Length: 314
Image (cartoon, rainbow, N blue to C red; front, side):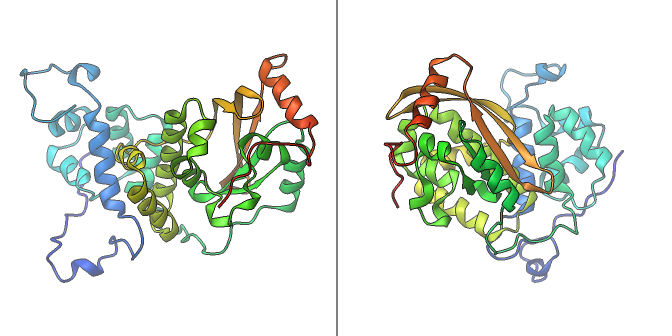
């Protein structure tokens, strides 16, 4: 199974800046992302977690050593070391599968590793044009009158939403389009700390979604700019970004404290769009007969001109 990933080039080499793997200006460094992702996944495993003896009381590194991981994956230490240094250009899918099994990666983490190590050559650079939502989908979201619903795109941008989403989460229509972004809302606006009872979990989810996006589009300058801005302005974001955790939008439960109707416990389902996997339809709902269901009905009954959740201001 041992193959030879491309050797790491000396950054002092004058040809280094023109290599095909170097990130363009304003992009995330895919090799650095691959390196840190593998290191953080290895650090979270202990020898006893994978059936290896833990020799010695004092280990210089957290988690598994490189040689232990290489043994589990069936590759040489030198090979795995080069891969963990970000040199995954020639790695095969079979080797990545073996390393993913050794690291006990879940499906989202395995997908992220593949995007980082074997980026698709035909993948287009994200367009600078605004993301578009089909007219039929807009009408569908509007018809979901009794439940909050919205569509997200790349970089956690909020593209469209219905009246109930505005009632629960705040009216985003007063914000410039570039500010309609879940990461900016959660980390930079204090009203969202008050809204989410489990704010720490919401923040971790948002960063994990951004990490998945970064693996698919490391050359997206707007994503790189967003990460840079949040890293400067939010210590919590910097800490979470450094964990390299990844997650796909799927389903779950969010607990909120609404300023008008009190506590809400809402389940949500995420549906990636079949014709555009960079967009997802997110729908929230309450358990039938629960206080949260009554609260949603109350918000819906007020209508568009009645008091709603506080408007989000620029």
